Amino acid sequence: MPAVLQPVAVPQKSLSDYTHICGRELIEEVRQLAEPLKGQRVMHVSATAFGGGVSEILYTLVPLMRDVGLQCEWQVIYGREEFFNATKLMHNALQGSPQDLDEEQWRTWRRYNEMNARELPCGWDVCLVHDPQPAALHSLVPEKARGWLWRCHIDLSAPNPETIERLAPYMTSYPASVFHMADYVPSQMDGGVNIVPPAIDPLAPKNMALSPEDASYVCAQFGIDVDRPLLCQVSRFDPWKDPLGVIDAYRIVKEKLPEVQLALVGSMASDDPEGWDYFNATIAHADGDPDVHILNNFNNVGAIEVNAFQSHADVLIQKSTREGFGLTVAEAIWKARPFIGGAVGGIPLQVQDGLTGFLVDSPELCASRSLELLADPELGRTLGRRGKEHVRANFLMPRYLRDYLRIFTELLEG
Image 1: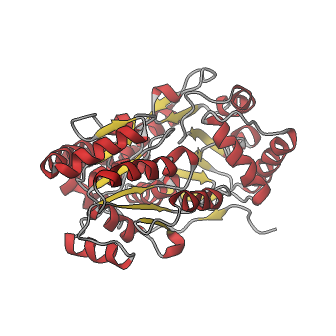
Image 2 (image 1 turned 30 degrees about the horizontal axis):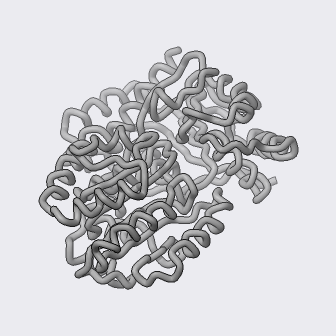
């Protein structure tokens, strides 16, 4: 039988290339931490290789782990539609949705975990399992790695009680775990917990410097009038990201500023069967407005296009109502553009209200902050500059790599 888990090919990256952005001190600290770990075999296991923050992180983290001397691999679990329907339900329930999985769906989740556990190769020093989809792996085949780590990328601050109780034995079986924020750690976790907010790759095509001319040119290809103001949210089409609320905010702005345009730009992930339904709901909510541009990766919107929209927009928005962390927030702020985000989850970690951007909790407040920024470009520039420095100091990939190397050191010594 062919291996069920799919190895993911990643590009080559060099830690040295980040020195001019992150500073020599951090880069040297990373190299010192990596020295005793050289040659250790590390396996990342995730649910998908594209669409969403986890895969974006791993496309940079895995090559950088290799560059500092770890033998690092990344494999994606096998799953069919029935599995991803169950895990999407689980994801929503863990973020507070009242609907739990039924018995058949729990059996489906367990069955696919057993299938993937059988095919997981042996002999790892560290096996790092990402999110709830493959969370049962450690309890099923603990002998396949010397050290195990479960990485949670979602907001577990107010989960559906039945779902978290059912998942808890699998999560707590890991000797160590990693969460974005202390608020996300469920009460069932009893030690070995690490708090590590994620980070972006400033050298990835999505985040590298783009000239204003190039950004305008790309936006114009998608029907944006580059001489009129543009609001933009880059995010998956998902109820928690609230694209419908962004359209409502845009409509309030348009009453005062008829020339404003809105772009909603998102990617469709292979493990998100609901995505298309919500994409269509967003189109329906826009009701044919020619100034609302709703785009995804099937319209040829890739990393450079996202970069162009973020670099060109007059106001960048992430009006989430729940948010594990929101890498799109750090990506947006890295472009030094004025930013408005929902005051939820990991967004306030990245945005100091009134200092590096604005936090909002309603379409009305989002609209009034947008109007304020459109009326005062100098305020937007000031917030944008401060925001970029905050991201540089806290949310770039070499810092993230350093935090993992510290955890690996503790895990393997322990």
